[in-house]
Length: 487
Image (cartoon, rainbow, N blue to C red; front, side, top):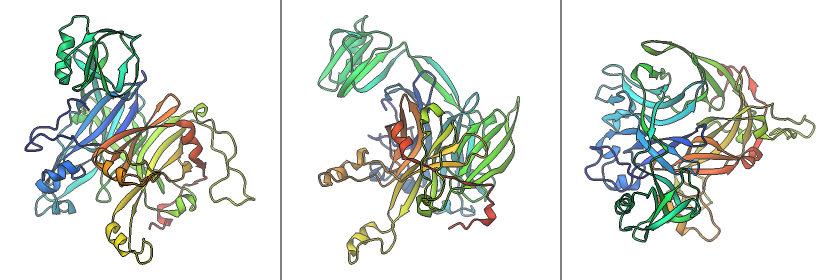
């Protein structure tokens, strides 16, 4: 992300790599996107660990929320730091939480999700705050996200790994390719120049472009444009609109907004069993207030789904899919059904698409007999597997389809070494990958995901392939949590 810097005071010297991960994606009406990313000094990035200035070294965990505007080609056009009310937690010897064993202070929002409500964009995130001298609240928060836009007066990155089509942009000559700044100055020296394509040390091609020029793929090149478009000017959360939800079980994380109404929020609290919370709100001139938070619906999918695993964790929900987009009206066999059982179809759309994950932790005897060296290398290590699911778009918001497990092959900057040592034809997935956003782009579902608590990436998938992965299930509704055996 060009020209994005870590806030002053995080590190003693500038970092060559800015840690940005767990991106949450949201589509806008004009076909562009917003993405919210977590910036942190956590120990996920090797460069931060090597600097000996991660949160585990300094005992101060710092976080910021970055909001970026992406074009239809998913290239970054502009970005801002989201202005937040003070979110701070200081641990003392008397603090009644395990966090004090590793940290002295925690700042800022973590692992945010952005989603459309009826009339506004909501942001949900995890944060830690002091509620008294010894008690620490470690839980979920939510608020409307306010955004101010402005006409882009300066330069913005129009597309990466791409160049402007000559038919859309007249060539004005070549500029200084020594650096990005020198290329910009070359363009600014010509009154007619409104854009340029650049490859550091190789070329700086000056252009006069139409308002929304098209590009063609060209690996290693950047296309820059000046003015004309809308850029993010400011993004902020108002203190009087920030809702803090009770942390009933020590730490509450990864809630998702199913449906946001003016005076009511339906939130996904847990995937399996599928627990839906309802937050009743009241609004006045002083802000937004939480009137009541209650458990509204509990359902459970069949035991055979994902082999009866209970270590099911939230990722992102929900992307609304119309009946036309789903294009599934053919009968499919229910998971775990016998031959004489009825065929099961999905209910009529719209339905809500989500992505969850399973965190698998290797344990003793999870290795070939006698291969003790392999066990010592992998014992207690983690790997994440993802899955898609569909919810009914109306109450009780039960799960109506689940996919098989899947993972994303190695693609992170810091994972390339492992990709290079794989045998020909061999594939491997990132150890930690976290889907935090889903958005539609034409006939594609764009998956936004974090890599190893360090990096972010976007994965466009054909919607038809995603839908084909989903198998209808019939969830039991009105389930009592008192009757569930939680493992």
